Image 1 (spheres, rainbow, N blue to C red):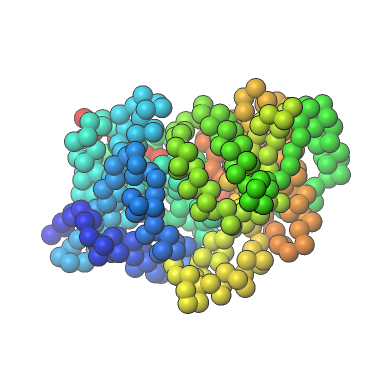
Image 2: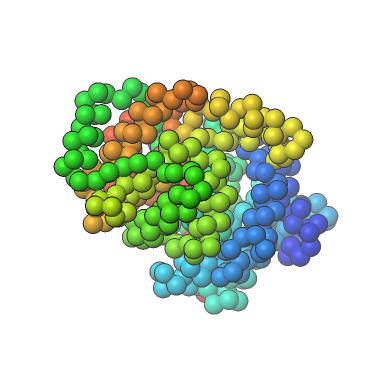
Length: 375
C-alpha cells in the first residue's frame, strides 16, 4: 500500500535528501549533490525563496520504505510577473511504478489547487533560476554542473499522469577548436564599431559588490522577455552569487559596457560535476581531497548564461563574449578544456539556437517542462 506523507521532521528531510543516493546507486551518470548544500537549500533560514513562496516536500512510502519523493511549491515571483496561477512541482524521484507516480503528482496537484492554482508545472526545483526540466534525451553521459539527471522511464510515468509538454530546453555540446585569427580580429572591429567594452569580473572585495550590482542590472533586463523568466529578489540573487562565487573563475566571467552603462553579462563555469561525481555527496573527510587535487584537472566548461540588454543587441557583444571565452580556454595555463556545454536554451529562442549552431554545437541533451490543468 503506497502512502504519501509530508516532510515534517529533520529525519524526514534526511530521507528526502538521501533517497536519490539509493535510487541511482547503479547509474554511473548520476552526480550526487553535496548533502550539506541540499540541507541549506531546503532550509527557510538559509534559502530566501521561502520568504515569498510556500514549499511542501512529500515522501512516498511502501510500508516504511521510501519509493518516491516530490516537492509542491508556489512561486509568487513567477505568477506576479506573468499574471498566472501556476503551481509547481519539483525534485520528482520514483521507482518505475505508475501508482507511485500517480500519487505523487496528485498530491502536488491537490496541494497547489488548495492554494488557488489552476495549472501544475514541473519539474522545477524550485524556479527556472535553479535546476529545472526532465531529461528526455541524452542519458549516456553525466550532466554538466547545475544541470539535472534522471531515469529514462520518468517521461512515460509523468505523461500517464496527464502531464504534457510545455517547453523543451536544449543543451548544446560545443567542441573546443582553435579560434581563427580572423575571428579574433573581427571581435576587435566589433568593439570599435559597436562602441562597447568587455572586461572580466573583479574578485577583490572592494570591487566585487559593484560588479555584482551590474550583473543584477543586466539580469533584470536582458532575460525578462524569455519564456518562464522568473525575476529573483535581490536577496535571492545575492544568495545565488554567494553560493557559487568562489567557484567562478574571473577569466570566464565577463561584463559588457556601452558608454560606461551595463550592457551585457556572460558566465561560464568549470564543470565541477567531474569532481562531485567522485565525492559521493560529502565534502569531508575525503571529498575535500578530491576537490583540491582535481580542481585544475577539469576538462569541461558549462556556459551558464549570456544576456545582452535589448537596446544594446545587434552590436556583436555576444560574438565577442564567446570568442573571448574560447580564446581563453584554448590558451589556459591550468585547465585543459576539451569541450563546453551551452545550456540551457529554449527551443523557441531562435537567436540563441543559431549562435550555438554557429559555434559548431550539437544538441546532446534535451530537457522538458510539463504542464497539466488541475482545475
